[in-house]
Amino acid sequence: VIKNCREDWRPVAEGAARGSDEISISASVPDHPDVAGKWRFTLMDVSCETGNCLNAGEETGLDLEFVRGQEGFEEPRTIRGGGSCGEGGGEEEIEGNETTNEATVRMKRRDYGAWARLKAEINVDGVWYKALSEDGKDYVTIPFDKNENRIADQWEEQYGVSGQAGDVDLDEKPEGVGRESGDGFTNYEEYRGVKVHAAWTDLDPGHKDLFIRDETGLGVGLLTELGLHLHLIDE
Image (cartoon, rainbow, N blue to C red; front, side):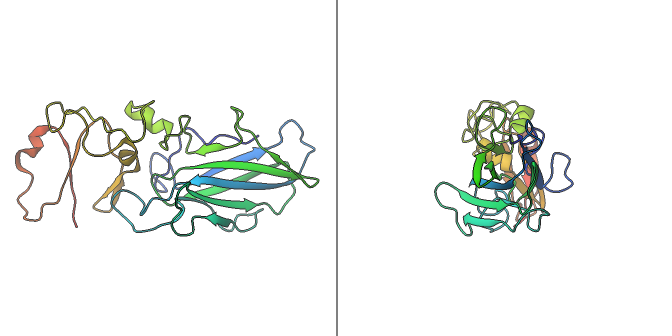
């Protein structure tokens, strides 16, 4: 059995109120405590966005990776995604160096929109057995994401957009300002978030956002009366 990702977790910065940059997942043989073997975990279909949010960083490669130097494991091996992942996303695996009934692996996010599938296998007497999730799949998603639109379900619930696709742009508020709906950012982009004066924040997918770089120092004037979510940004 492989356990689901915690439903309250999403990839944000260490110490932030709504999560951290690490997540741990466990797999075990719960009905047979006397069975032991060597475990192997594989991150599949890992997202590979450039940077770490919409407007910061130039990093490429895997957005989610196994923590290096984990006790009980060999060093991870990147199968695909050392540079640009290309179509299908990246892949990385890590193997245990101990014989156990249960194993817990740690992963670290490198992007605020990081997403992947994780599978676990155990080798008992030379035979590999797949671990199954609570709903019978041979993988779990990181973060917890039932419809697999690459957005954490808890974030969608928080903003009332559960069931929507990740690529829609349906911001309704404030009414009568700008386009009938939308602000140019998809749900996934608002979830992945931005940095404003070096501080990361996600965006409200129901409320239109406007970013302003005030090069002349004139201020935003009556734009504050429109009810938009204004963000003053620098170069």
